[in-house]
Image 1 (tube, chains in turn blue, red):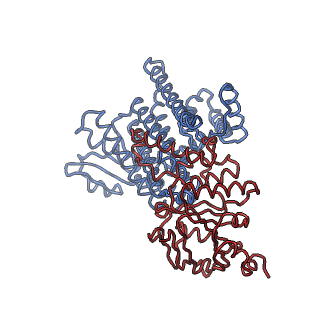
Image 2 (image 1 turned 30 degrees about the vertical axis):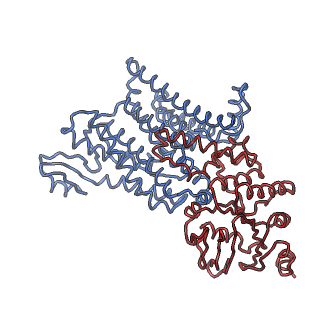
Image 3 (image 1 turned 120 degrees about the horizontal axis):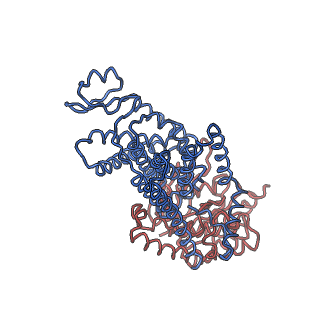
Length: 362
Length: 252
């Protein structure tokens, strides 16, 4: 009985440490920001930091918890960004309350991304490993390229959509308002993303992920990851859980996209290319696959680093590369992980001997 | 009425008749052995009975319900649980979580209730924790509840797999070579465990085994398979002395 309580207590304690880290980061940044002492180069980083943290945490649900490699995560951000930005531009004059409009925009972006996540997952259900990675990679590229050629505008007779600029100028009246301008993307979206909203969404993403993992559903998903055949024979419906995790992860990636779109004067689909997906994956891998806390910490460090390193000028990328390698070794090398565990064990010598329950580390 | 009735079950892979015309009737509470040389089709029969493979001929029923052609999830819910020849545990999860996964379909709360941490989450988890711990106690694993399944010694992994299978609340338990890789004293202990499971849980057990000491020690009846076909069937002591059976094992 004692041991059992300990295991539950351990999971809860781990979660509280995660929430604690988030709270401290939030309070620190907020005080720094409100005091006016934060340099401009950092203030403009705050929302992107949250955005990429959300993307990394949600991708970790797919890569770490479900165990499927997805290379198209930026594609879901792209859907969230475009759908919400279109919504905000159309309803800019109808809903004048910024906060309410942004809240609806978040829902629109999240739900659109979730729907696409669900649809993509249906063919993907039959695939494993490399094949799944290829499909998600192709999906990301297709989404990006579609948005690159779409023109969307609104005039007196309603919405106008075309897939090339000459056709678009033909059907569009001169006094109309262009929303999506092909490869130029969307310009003039109301900049509603604030640090506080972005942070609240990051917090929700982390809380949902942790609660999901430590529940019936999360256990079932991890069982599928560890052994599909055994999972089936104890009665776990594999497609259901795959769809569920994929959809939830896409929803949060969509929210990240909404934050991204409402943080800039203009953006285009080019921002959500293959490199962006890989960047998010790098955060996940370096933070530790399956480790939610690691995902956002890695995202924050690696996204902020190039800015912080501006002072060393041209050696910037050199330091960045070194840090990448160090993080990779610290989080993924067995010997170093053992050393780290021993160090932690030494630090709390008075506690009971630690058996190998670090696997539940979230 | 018999618990499990298998009639003329068969499967063909390409041109190979891996199992052909397999018949079996299991009464409730029996302990039945399935033996035969390597490649005889024993594990294939388990895969057919659990829905991993779909039979190309024949049918089988559990408690009168036709299960042939159903998928593994439906068959698990109908009440057939199994263990595997090469242990298949959820290696990166704790021992307790492995058993709780066996209880998966008895936990009645939705994903949303889990995410929002509604009261039903806490009450169900608490109840299932207790149930899982009881099962672990039966198999003497309660002190390893927080250990990762992968870090358990071999013998205990075998036990955990049986515990996980029992957690699904089955009517029929299939054990695929439970004594593989065990030393004589571990095998002896396993025999006691299997008998205990049958008596305590009122379970019907069908097992595949190569260890004849175990088979003759606990199985009341056996079927011998050779090249996918039934070679002999009957009381364990009679069958093991059957010259045909000895020939199949040792050659001419």
